[in-house]
Length: 353
Image 1 (cartoon, rainbow, N blue to C red):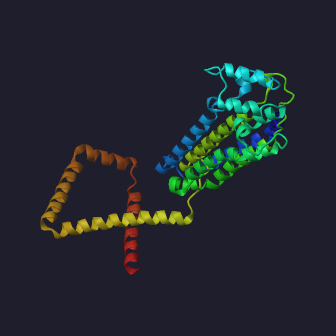
Image 2 (cartoon, one colour):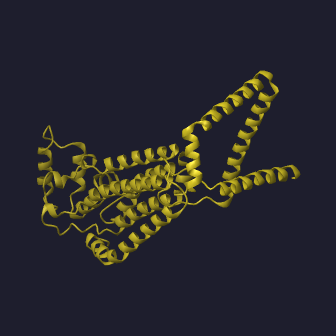
Image 3 (cartoon, rainbow, N blue to C red):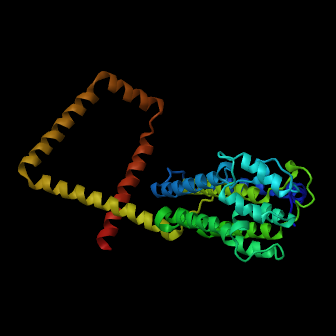
């Protein structure tokens, strides 16, 4: 049986070895993500849908773990020991009822909790399984496990559905779909882990317990742990989706094909813009009124710039820049020559091609 003491021993033994490696792995992934030439971005709109689904799932899981929504525990509410006689136990329980009489569920439990084994099974599988199982008996304790198995797995089925919906391509796109397999594995591990823990639990663990406060309320504890674990998985997956969708962690660089496609799209947009400019220029040249306006504009522009360059302050500033060497005239001429040759060469290649 895997008990709390065993888990503590494993944590203290493996923790010093596993924790540094996890921290090192996180730092490596973060450094690698920062080194990639992929800038961070705002979270896509469709990823928000997935986060909303995970938020609702986490809230429902936390609510299901609240003690107020759990079935009543007759030993807890009456502060009774597991060896308390049946008459005394249910007399105390009836005194807590509003009308001072036993309810229908209390009568069913009274007949079921007649033996110590039945009370141990009650603390292990809860009141509903003990009362409603038609074929279970204390002589075959394993039958209670088989009858309780669907009730243990049903919350995990809904949880897996929420994980699958949040990581589907329709809801969260590629960012969520890349974690679909991992989310399904984690959800399945939670379900199988609970089945293993319940199946391996020693249902007679409370048989020798003397005090009421020392009782191991296994069924109620498992309900709380189940809800908390589901909420943690949902929160963790939501954090991973946020980090990956904004390019903060686990960044996948674009493939060469994707890069080529993006460059081609940019070139096509530029070509479309140049074609539009050419069409506008052609229309201006062909229209007499627009052509006159254009000629008037450039004539006026030349006169204005000529007046500016003839001003005394401008002339002195240009002369001072040339004399001080801040402006390399020869370098500017060489760069202009190369630029012009590049344009002429590109135009000739385009015409011959």
